[in-house]
Image (cartoon, rainbow, N blue to C red):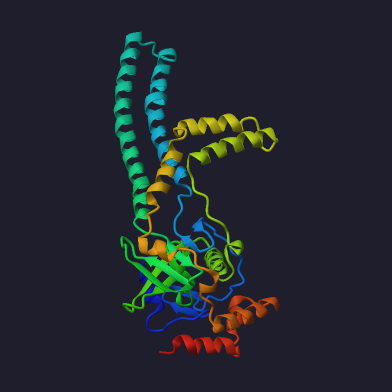
Length: 368
């Protein structure tokens, strides 16, 4: 979470509007809101950010997806050190007993083997300990970092968004139609090649202080950011049945599901006979269920509870008390959906300067 893009995009001095393309030093950003208009992109949760989806709200944060794999990599590195030092090196030395071209005395080989075993044990202790501390620190650090920030909660019945600053228990609530969102492309050089990075950003205005708080998330491609925003938007405007469901989390149940899947794929002829013993060997080396136990701990620990005020704010409301979309949003949404039906894209629609709804929106957003 950073304000760097906010400064580059000048969100405070020049409030953006949907469809606007804004340039900054290293690239450009396409704004998707405000107002939150249809983008024409498929609604997808690429990356597993939707940690809760129900009739009242959607929580967008970080799931523990791939946490078990992260632990497995750490354990695999540790085991490679231990196996190399305690098994492979001693075997190489012991092989000299049987393949010694100089025919040295047997006790000479024994003493060499003992020396090598002592040396490899020290290396295994130091190297394994270093690998375990380094990898374990990385695993724990990512969990602690995730636990410091609560998810962003979008309440579709109130048409409001709840946002927490990092390490803060004070909620910031702003109207849904005032939230800004964009996908940006930045280009830089490594000295040998030109690299492009993509960012999905959301900005939350705080009426009490006049500040704008920015959430930035790196994405693999612009479509990842567009699809995530469209999934949030379609949830807020149409309901959970039009939005991807809750992202699955990893735990001990994931291990059982994978083991069952391996057996089913072999039974149905999708994999070879070697796949089953290979799966067991890989998981034995990476300490069987341990990585999935860590993933389950990560899920429990990092799911920070909401304050009582937000729990009350998140309660389901009677249908007659639901907030309604603005007339401007309804009119512009109908206009852009008509343009989509005629083959126009989101950028094409806004590139038409004679589109009166867009002009009206610009005047509305930029008015003091």
